[in-house]
Image 1 (cartoon, rainbow, N blue to C red):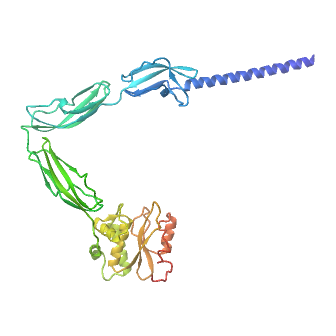
Image 2: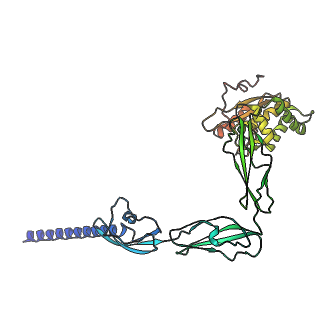
Image 3: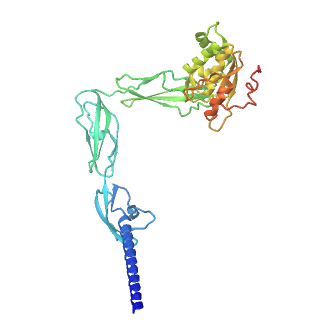
Amino acid sequence: MKTKKNRRRRSNRRFIVVTVAIFIASAAMGAYFYYDYTNRIYGDLVVELGNLVEASDFLKDSNKSIDFIGEPEFDLMTPGDYPVKLQSGIYKYDAVITVQDTTPPTLELQPLVRVMTELPSVDDFVVSCNDLTQVQVSFYGSPDFSSVGKKNIDIVAKDTSGNQTVESTTLYLVDEYDTTPPTIEGELDKTVYLGSSVSYKKDVVAVDDSDYEVELTVDSSQVDLNTVGDYTVTYTATDVFGNVATATGTVSVVKQEYTEEDVYALADEVLSEIITDDMSDYDKAHAIYVWVKGNIGYSESEDRGDWLKGAYDGLVNRHGDCYNYFAVSKALLTRAGIKNADIEIIPTATRHHFWNVIDCGEGWRHFDTTPRTDDSFKGFYLTDEELMTYSDAHYHSHNYDRNVYTYFNDENSDN
């Protein structure tokens, strides 16, 4: 009897364990299906007027599938709330598509000229007005049509959803229409250097006998600033009455020739202001360093390979990149009688750099006038050891080829 009771107890315990396990599994399964049901779709979908809607737009997980049930009835061209039914897997849903209109109309206006006896309507100013709903266009405020002169006109376009756009234009009220075209005067012919830029409207004016402004446009589509030659440019002047005048000019693109005489003349002008005969070479070099640092601004440049051009551009334009800093320094050092030579970094795909070396009687020293983002750097009269210490700490900023530039291979050498 005792054995039977033990068996019965063990059987009861097994039953309880199995029952609990089934209960837990059922609860977990139910929780999973409930979570999957409530989190599979968005219950409400808000779309802008005119946009397309697909059943998949309701899905939170794009890997699931979903379809509308039946033929959904919603009008994407009319704002409102539209109930829809959807099915994803075993689940069915009630959802709502909300169509809203928050986009204002687009409005393009034109200026007008009218005599006092022909006052315009609001529609006369409108070039185009676009919206997905009907739009009402009207004057914004009360325009002044009581006297001749230039009038600022504000016009508002408002759609059926209440969105509105306000734009401004100009009305010229006159006593009578002007039929005389403007004239174009000034320096229509220009000479520019190869590869440079040109301001076509500089020293060119459009003159009209009315008191109103004249629009001046330039057609320079035929000009190639990278090819030597003569090119025709067309100027067009249009007054507010619609009278048009045209004129042509010639843009001559020429190659700039730089000579030592040109560059050295510019360098001598600078040196006459910053050095004296009683200065040592060291003092002269320092004066040159200070002048270049203080008078040349940094900007990107295409100058390469022609140091005379680099120096000329730097001295005339007072800006440039490292090549211009190097070339200007070379011209000033040479004219000051200071022994100098060229040096450049081992180039990479993203970096190139040029600077000078000088000898004021104590051996070669580095002379780098190009500004750096590191304000603590002073590139004047640096020994090779000093510059290499800086270079190693700043991404090899001055990593040059010692087999090419042998100035510092033998500090006692006079090469």
